[in-house]
Image (cartoon, rainbow, N blue to C red; front, side):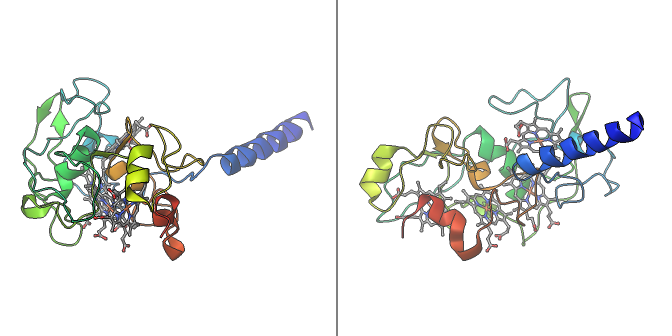
Length: 208
Ligand code: HEC
Ligand code: HEC
Ligand code: HEC
Ligand code: HEC
């Protein structure tokens, strides 16, 4: 009896926990789960992280993948008010598979990177041919001064989040790939941070 009660209590608190965790999906089974590919390791996280002997990449979370060495042509337009720089550390992590110059399976074993052979082809290529000019700008400061200068932007909630709901993170005020994408969670498709139905995600920042 006591056992049954305990398991009811446990399952109730589990479901409450799950409901209160925002976007509770995981990386397992998503296009970022490379563990079943037969590419040299069945360890899911190892393609990108390691607990020890990580690559010495400043600003990266225990990174275990070869980094891109590309210098990109950056976004520009007549109306863009931001000031873009070469991609910041957080975005370079993505580009170190997605720009097509580094293979997805170029991860490290005990700190030594193996030469992978599986390169991004056309469909998910971003920054290919060293060109970021046709992608949403990244690696620039999104702050209230920019919002005022633009005239059609909500001011960001803080240096850590674009929105008051804390769904779209900023990295020391910088807008990066991971502002819009959750690399570990495909709940909304295309690894988006939130649903973009009716362009809801765009309109969290833009007031058009
Ligand atoms: C395809 C590459 C990739 C795989 C596989 C991956 N991660 Fe990550 N991870 C990233 C990137 C990129 C970031 C930085 C961007 C961000 O913070 O969202 C990150 C950030 C993190 C962070 C710090 C920020 C946070 O979200 O808490 C932790 C912790 C983490 N990953 C854990 C894991 C674990 C555990 C696994 C395996 C179950 C895993 N990751 C698998 C790419 C990956
Ligand atoms: C996290 C906030 C955020 C999200 C989400 C976001 N944007 Fe932006 N976007 C910005 C900021 C900040 C700028 C820079 C604006 C400026 O400098 O005038 C920008 C720039 C742009 C520009 C270029 C403006 C110019 O003058 O060249 C376009 C177009 C644009 N965004 C469209 C979109 C679309 C479409 C979406 C949804 C798919 C989207 N944005 C999602 C914050 C965001
Ligand atoms: C270790 C390599 C690697 C890293 C690092 C990585 N990706 Fe990917 N990504 C992949 C692979 C492989 C696919 C699946 C490609 C395919 O099958 O065509 C993919 C697919 C995607 C897709 C498409 C998902 C879909 O539903 O089709 C998006 C979006 C994406 N990645 C965004 C990101 C972003 C943003 C980051 C950084 C925060 C990132 N990726 C980091 C390897 C990587
Ligand atoms: C302002 C938000 C925003 C930023 C910043 C952003 N993305 Fe995306 N990305 C999107 C949206 C929205 C989609 C889905 C587009 C669709 O389904 O039509 C997408 C789609 C993708 C895809 C799937 C292929 C495609 O073209 O549809 C990949 C891969 C991807 N993004 C990677 C990246 C990488 C890498 C970065 C940084 C260099 C990045 N994204 C920055 C919003 C963003």
